[in-house]
Amino acid sequence: MNILIREDDIKKRIQEIGAEINQDYKNKNPVFIGVLKGAFVFLADLLREISIPAEIDFLGISSYTGTQSSGVVRITQDLSINIEDRDIIVVEDIVDTGRTLNYIISNLKTRGPRSIAVCTLLNKKDARLVDVPLTYVGFNIPRVFAVGYGLDYENKFRNLRHIGVYNAQ
Ligand code: IMP
Ligand code: MG
Image (cartoon, rainbow, N blue to C red; front, top):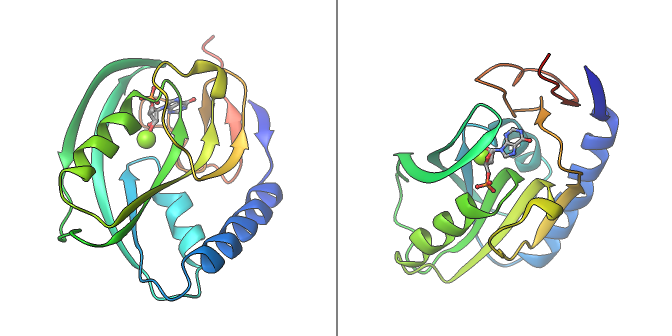
């Protein structure tokens, strides 16, 4: 499998993003909302770069079958805390068409948070169908199917330490 982003480069970029968030959210107590399952590895590493008070929660979302976005988004696991008046940072593994994130943002908005920011490790800019505001982006990548570091192909490859390109053979 071809390597797209090396382990060291992921680590370095997450340190940079963590520093930015520490700066942007000092004197705040943000809630990081990890989008399951893909974002759990990224959130775990990002959180350890955060030095301000912060909380985490998870939102389970399902939108993909194989390597095609279905466009049908559903919540498989809801938040466990009340986010009213809270500063929210949605943590995603990857933004592709933007449909999943668009759904997540409009769903979270109905719960009355003070603010919503989005932090995604990967961004497939050229695949966008729905415009979504991204506050922190780890890496812009081309329209390939990325696996590893939490991202899967049919629930496999999440354990890779780097990000690779999946090629169906
Ligand atoms: P979107 O709704 O098309 O933006 O798709 C977003 C979701 O699809 C992400 O949260 C991922 O779970 C999944 N996804 C999109 N592209 C990839 C990829 O290249 N590899 C693995 N999962 C992907
Ligand atoms: Mg995802």
